[in-house]
Length: 360
Image 1: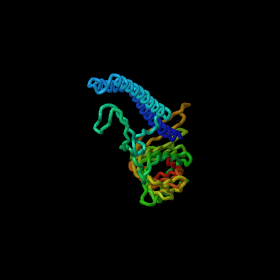
Image 2 (image 1 turned 90 degrees about the horizontal axis):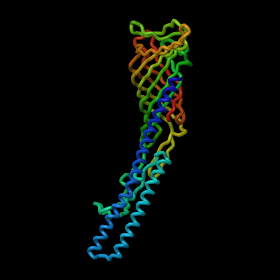
Image 3 (image 1 turned 90 degrees about the vertical axis):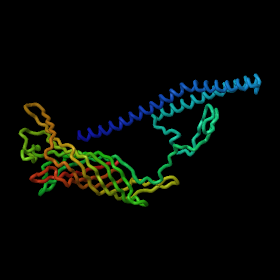
Image 4 (image 1 turned 30 degrees about the horizontal axis):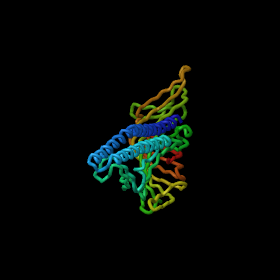
């Protein structure tokens, strides 16, 4: 159970780090907006100087009278004062919007607006923009929604009971505790619709970390022998705990069957598995990335914990069959390793797991 808790904490930490990075990014955006706000007054003053210089040139050329020049200067000053007020208000509103939503706000340029407003200041630009120019242009950053998304992705979490099937014996005769042996799986999968006009059959694929634990019965522990084999032997002291764990990195592959709900609009068509029955049949293949054993016992009044990390002559290649069935993202899950746990063992053992799977 501690192992499961540990990996859930790792997962939670990853989400927290992701949120922290997002928090840092949006704080940088706020700092940039504040810097822009400080530059607004300088920009508007420079623009005012430019307008007044043009008015003075008109006066010197005799195109306007002194009274007209004074009126134009006053009008220009009022305009730029209002520009400062309005532009600062716009940035203040952006900052407030970001802070109120913790940065989770889409910019207008990235939304699906067909047109975008543009405001220009200064001399004529290459597009013909004037000193103060309001234009309605087509939004170049507009992203049309994908009409038909054929591939979706899910976080996969599975947990349950684990054990081993020994050749020539039933599961009841297993040398491992049924209630004490557990597994945990954490991975990511993609779901792709197989047929163009039907979502009844999906192709599921991805990667997973599997942690298969086995707790030995009858005060036994796993021993590596000189001939390269591994076997269970009785421990010399009374064991409080004897747990062997195999860590695998695998690539699951399933064909998934089941109905879905279709929703269609003018812009998009989607299939939903919400509250729908699903059945997946397939398998997995990958690698053993680590094996370890944990022993707990009492020695002369002291609690001793031994953590042994060895190969124990386990197979490096992992492959097996798996299936799941359930409604929505709550599924019954079973997997069975076709490869023996140990190489060259006198009696072959194969790992089997039964539990619950959650597609989040």
